[in-house]
Length: 112
Image (cartoon, rainbow, N blue to C red; front, top):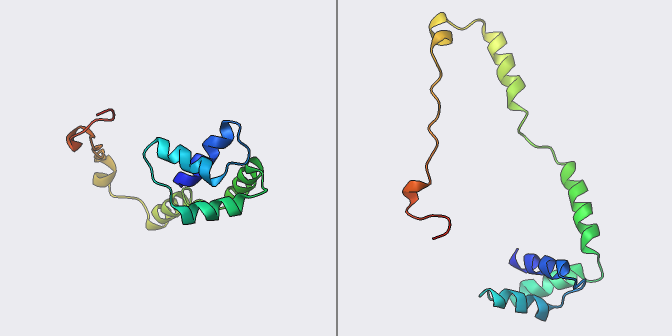
């Protein structure tokens, strides 16, 4: 991922076909050592291709992937209807809100 991020940064900077040494230079500027094997694979896979076209093609493919977020609501509604009416005690009892976890007890802040 770090190699691809450096490749994309170079592309944003105007270098439309970054070389392996360009990517290594970007990574080393932030203290990251480049993996030569992965870098060579990335360069060979992207050679001669327009990165903007690849991103657009990938976005189209991701749009066709189903996501599971909406599947649970109808099943829960159907189960409640099939089960009949809930007893009055359960319907009248207020739901307990889940307590959100605080980041304060982790011992560090965002900018520490």
